[in-house]
Image (cartoon, helix red, strand yellow):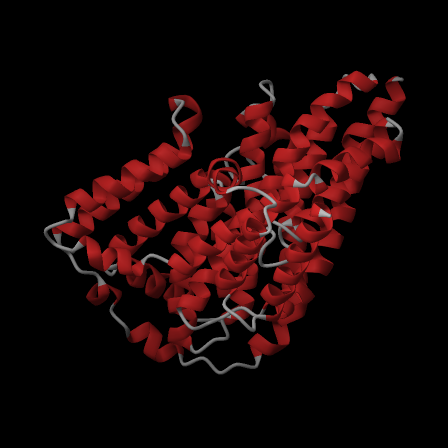
Length: 432
């Protein structure tokens, strides 16, 4: 009975999230509240086990850092400079957005990157009167592809890296970055054919853009230098966190609190908190609670264990099935809880005589990261982009995104299957 109830509440909530008829944070929180009222789990279970407070705190911290920095005009300055470099041409602007997002997502993490870069692109598109959807689509795709390349790029990679000691930062770079680069090039080609006609036909008034003085938008004050310094320190901390042995959330919180203290006399804390995307944060909380209901009744665990029964322990079938199941499932719910459920299952494969598990770990990472592109709730970065866009009155329709996201994920999984088979499975079969 509990399984039917939790699944029904999840599916109904997901339907309303897809249709965009009601605010998605309200829908997710309503579904979570129903799970509490029906006794699926307790309040203690929700707050202690299912809500990922590290993700919530990381998002909140970066929102605070960016809100303060935005007040200095730095993002407006970058937006104008960037647009002037490509003379406002839509296609180069679109590709440039993808390149910058992918690089940032690989070196930092994709959530931080979109928090920094989406406000810039929204300013550029509004300035040039360009449709924001193609640019936001490219940013989401690029963030998840770029995040696939490194251990710190996407939360699932961080979780896998923490669970398997010998999978280091270099391991992820060597094994996943080549495919991430291939997928990024494929994505640019696909985007070019999808939007080339609509963007080429737009008339851009680049004269006004080129005549603008970007420096006029930059407020040179102590707050500017404080913001840049703390932001760079935080980003450096992200890049060095593996060596510092400090959690990403702790680094982000430290940066946010430090900047709040340094700028308290110039900018009130109340004003900064008003700029925080609370709708996005509460949607994350509601989403964690909804998926927690599926975890509580055993739906996710049973699906994971079914993989072993389906493949009967066959090495090649298991790796490919995990790739596709994680890819498809991560498009429906956030990939973080699914990976959390799958990690102990993969560890159990050793009891079936499967000692060389690295290709299976790579399959899990690729499926979870690339599969996040399917829907707006498939990955943390997607939810953040949707929240920022909605805050700027440039809402991304859930169904419209799916029409692009689902086919691209299917293509991604086909390419990833070929990559996994040729690089790992075929050589392994040759040795046995």
